[in-house]
Amino acid sequence: MSDTAAVSESDLAILNAFHGHVGPYVVAGLRCGRFAVNRLQAQAHFGIEVVVRCPGAPPPSCFIDGIQISTGCTMGKMNIRHELSDDIVARFRNKRSGETLNLRLRPEPVARAVEIMQQQDDRAGAEVILSFTDQELLEEMPH
Image 1 (spheres, one colour):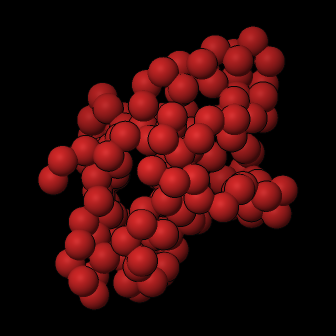
Image 2 (image 1 turned 45 degrees about the vertical axis):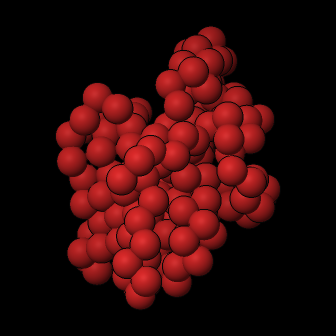
């Protein structure tokens, strides 16, 4: 996996405006969605759909908001769905090509980020997520 473009302060400001704060799960979702759009060469907003499997309550469910921001998938367009799961996995599909990509958020970086978040604050946890490469943060899963 190659790293996607760095997350900028502007990206974090957009996350904050949409989600209400910047924490590790929303940043992880942003990175996951951005990686998928790039890998699938999908058109954001209308050319991609995603099923997010994750717990049904914050903070892990915040992952969904990061994916919405980075992919343009929204509930209103009906191109994002949430299914309950203990894992955090997203299945992306390029609507034009039909190509799919399954990405799992690796538990080790998340555990480290949550630990720092609990010791300090949400933003410190987000910074931990930003310190990992895409390969360290995301695992490609078979279809």
